[in-house]
Image 1 (cartoon, protein in one colour):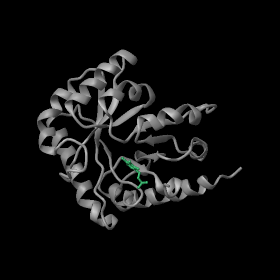
Image 2 (cartoon, protein in one colour):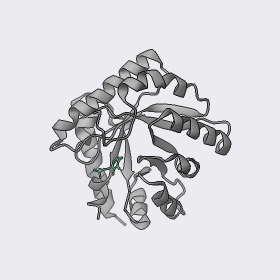
Image 3 (cartoon, protein in one colour):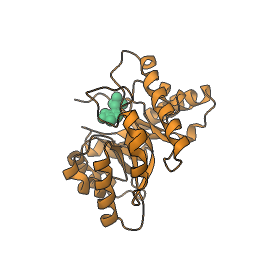
Image 4 (cartoon, protein in one colour):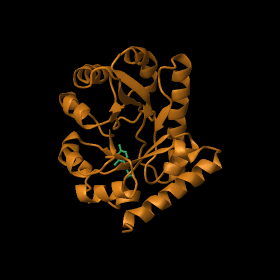
Length: 234
Ligand SMILES: *Cc1c(COP(=O)(O)O)cnc(C)c1O
């Protein structure tokens, strides 16, 4: 039975492909995280049925109440990304629930995730992204870009983490074009850091409902899209 979210997904994929084509990129290298905060499990299941393969949540507690209900019965359950701030006392629950933590924003948190990953998932590297505050926005979490230049190496030494790349949450801006400098800054930061140490992966998680096309033009490999999929949040 066709689902309302099938058409939504087709529209988003078309927009992603068009933006990728504009800059000569391969759209299949761009991953869409369907951000499901406040969305009931049943509706998130609809998104999985429509073909979304990665779900994002910004709170550990909310994910705890949803992951099992969403995953139940799927031969290929979706992957789960944590896209919101992580408190150190919730690291254990987060590593158990999520496939990727996108919001490592301090050395202390990186160490903690590394230790917990060693315990819960021995013998493999747990995928994370480092959140960078490229706008120097006091209301936003994330490493200061200058600090990251120094703090990167000790994080890359952690043997139970795989640092796949960088993530940023842009400021609220009046239009998509105004977000471009933020995305460009994250890409440039990634290029600078990777020139120094290639153990940092190339992923760039940036761009949301209102600006994901601009983010693609600036090199995003992971888009975090909520409202364009699920509608307005209450
Ligand atoms: C809610 C959220 C999103 C999705 O935002 P939309 O504007 O609904 O697409 C992306 N990233 C983070 C960190 C979020 O909290």
